[in-house]
Image (tube, one colour):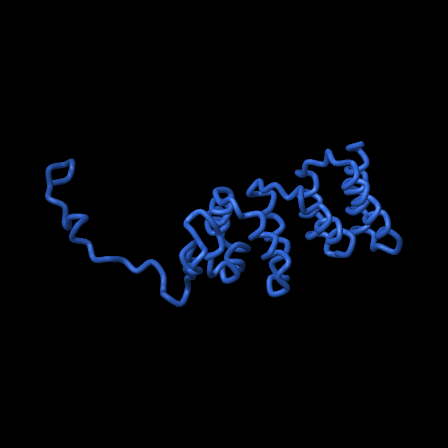
Length: 178
């Protein structure tokens, strides 16, 4: 009975199942258990990640779910760095880089890699993501910071205007940490 005393036309339990999506229009990612060394707390067995990257661009729910997984996984930094370095994921580099800081991952040990990426990229969107990653790093090691500055300053001559401006911003940020 509903609130006005009439019997509803159909109880919730009697409703037929509703197909929300066609099987060709979704992707399943399996976390853990695919490789013998994978456990529930790591990403070694994460299959389907690359297939989810297009959805990350268009579906904020998928992106948030992936970020939640990354935030809760101890080896997420190594996993994400491997995905960033994978040439097959080049189309999604900007999204992968954003995941580093959106998942609050500590990329400090990888300052040399991100410095080299900033020194060689001419994509302003990639450079902006790298800048954010570097700004989130613990830059207390002056030797590593100075090495990063040398690489970045060395890359400035001949840089296009916007990419060069972003690299100059990264240089200024690193110099401000002295």
